[in-house]
Image (cartoon, rainbow, N blue to C red; front, side, top):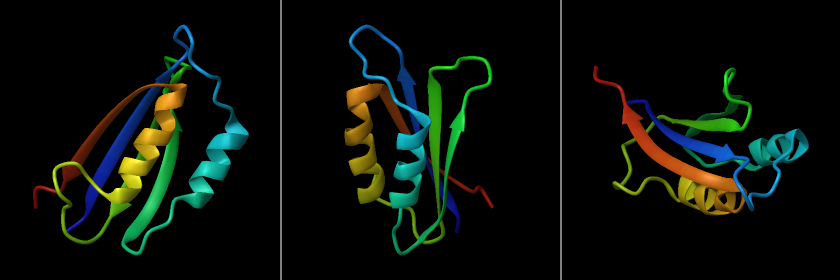
Length: 92
């Protein structure tokens, strides 16, 4: 069963550090894990300081707090702004 982890980052508030495209590309290249199918980084077309990282997995759904990879990524991104995490699975 395929499932997704979605990590949303909102930057640009007072005291937030600036995140650049090069950093995001390097980050995406480091996102690896045995069952990870893909990792995508997307920008909100309406709000320039919103980013989302979508991790697609193929094996069983993780514990409620998510995968270790998403946990580390969420912690790393907190230095840049507000982070929101959620996990989604197919309803098939």
